[in-house]
Image (cartoon, rainbow, N blue to C red; front, side, top):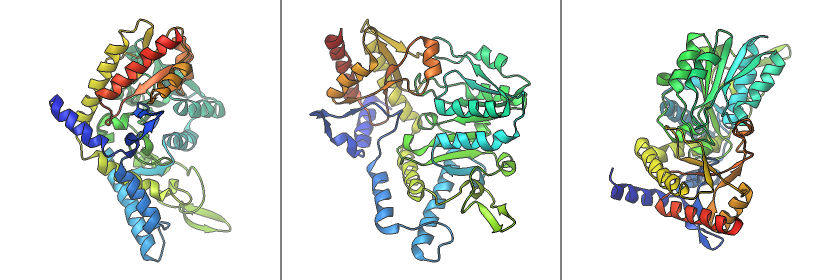
Length: 410
């Protein structure tokens, strides 16, 4: 796709996001915080509004039209997600509140099979949500948590994959894309090594699903988790993919309505998959909104969108490198369009405030990766994350804001 076609498509995409029509501090909004959450297209907003306006009903077991209609859309979403992930069956698609709950579900339920002395392997760049749950499990079960090393440039140390995953490893949980470094991890190498020792794998795909086509069967992962809100969908809705043979033997995560087959005073039998793991009233509009977000995304070629983001990232990185006081954090050869950096002599919070005054939205802080930052010898970074609706003018305004911050603060 040539640059003219790319610019034309970006304009068409931008027009679908009403948030980008507003001004912030008297300036056009430049939104560079998509790693935290993506903006929502009008089609998703309208679909959720329609559900609340005309279709409100709880799903499953209703004896009326609205409930039947809501149930149909709810389960259409499950099938659409199954196709999106290339899962074998809808029984392998569990609805959760997000990536964090999906990971906790696996830690609590599958983690019950771990024993004292077993090892859990993570990477040093994991988000807290894919670290703390395993540390808690390890304390409870007297297991050991080990970490695959990250190199100074932000890449996974592939030699560390080989040395860290051993015959004692029972579970490997790792991110497909770092939320702070942008690093795209060698998924198949990690999965292959884990399989060779009989370990189960969980892929945190929160950032990955907006970057690359996902095929759980080709990747060979046992579990995968992601959140809708990072894929142009609503907050509070997520997905856990799990291989059926594992989910079948795992105990329920929570108890309540929907996850039961029969209850009497003496005890309970549990529902079949996927409902065994979906206790209580579900996030119906979350599922329906996610269905619409997938329809939105699938209008486009995800590889072309990725290349667009990569082009903008290169412009941003090249410009930042011209500022002597700026140091980039994470320069892996294979990475998403996430640009973390520090400015020597400037606190990242002050930098973020000045950019905000210019209408530029970035994120500052530790990005829920405190152990990694401690290893790198820093307390936080400024992070600009690029998405499909950004353009060259956004990058220009961002760079101008960084330069203004330098003039004001140094």
